[in-house]
Length: 232
Image (cartoon, rainbow, N blue to C red; front, side, top):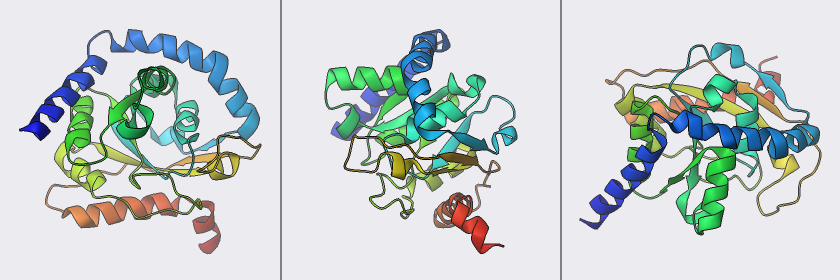
């Protein structure tokens, strides 16, 4: 009963993002990003983007990216075309980013974020609702930031979403963000960052969840520069 109550409450919060005026509400955050977030971010990272031409149409997509820095979400927002950025919601850990009202408000505005419960199915149901209403969603299937920048095993939720929603999964590799701001620090350093988008993936419902998770993880890993070098 309690879990159902939490699920209903989370879905009501998701509905807040999916009303007809949601894109209009997104513009203040977009303006703020252009004024205070993107300029220093690009100066720090000299951001390079590869593969975005594969993102045709307006989605929705599930962006599945590696995660090694708090800068991953703003970097991916900066890499996306405007038509997708305004219709994207980034999952942010409820226990970390929404632990206080002011912090939650800030990440909603700057990062197009929504509160994501990492335990149970509440967070996944929120993602389902957002996708149903035409929003793309950014997820980090590792579940938390990597301490050393190396890709960690993916959680099973990304496979469940791929099979139940039939939405295309876009593998993403973010290279260099760990060098700019690794886990455990809030101090940024200059370093080149590259964001690589892979071809969208769609999975038939007859596949098993474990194989879907493994395929998505493999496709994300294949975008890493080291994978390029191994293939030469």
